[in-house]
Amino acid sequence: MNSIRNFRDMGGIEVSGGTIKPHKLLRGGVLDNLSERTLDQLISDYHLQTVVDLRTDEEIKKAPDDVIPGVESIHIDIMSKARENADPNEMMKGFKREVSQEHMRGLNRMFIMSDACRDEYRRFFDVLLEKREGSLYYHCTAGKDRTGFAAVQILKILGASDEVIYEDYLLTNTLTHDYVEKRLKEIQIEENLTDAQIDNIRGYMTVDKTYLDEAFLAIEERYGDFNNYITEGLGLNETDIEKLRMLYVNPIV
Image 1: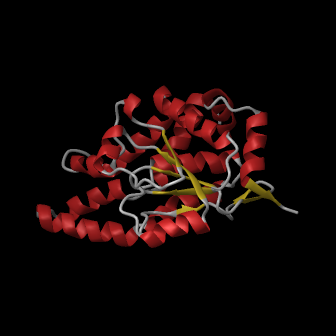
Image 2: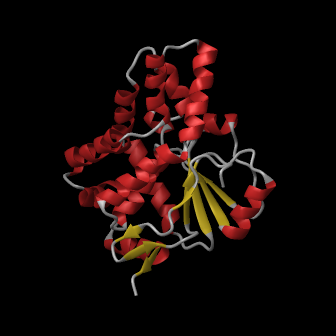
């Protein structure tokens, strides 16, 4: 699945009392210009049934997902109502006037502090709570920020340890390393930029532990702890959580 940026199957990740079921929750970047082989893998191997696109209308217009016959497409725009942009291609244009890591920490804080972002993530969980056959693929442009925090919430709710959550979050840097470095070299040549400027742009194109730290800090500030965020922010109850476990967790036998 190398043709899909930052693609991964969450199956096998350890959570409380078991592991996430394989071929149920898939995450990554945009599904455009897919090869016939990749399409066949998605349908035949991963049994893809649903795609949730977390991007803005503008992002979708620039790079629409390929139409996959028989696959349901759902649009949940995390950022537009918050009047912010989470498209790495757009964010990195600010490299001359801001520090990228500060910007990215602010973005992750917004996921919590913005009621609009929170409401869209709640819609995402409404989709997860609907029983569906096959797998569900959720994505944004690069599959790392909006998608990354969606994955964090899923894992935290299902009882994954913080160590497991951070490991999965930071896996983006391994999976996208070659793409990012190739693109940075192209940008440096095209724009005649210094190494320091390229290092700053790298902060938009990767993830960092401090980005996720900022989201958890915002949860503590606004809700007290993650359990309160689940109930007060996302509006999920014990029945919802148990249903998520039933749908997506293989219990230890």
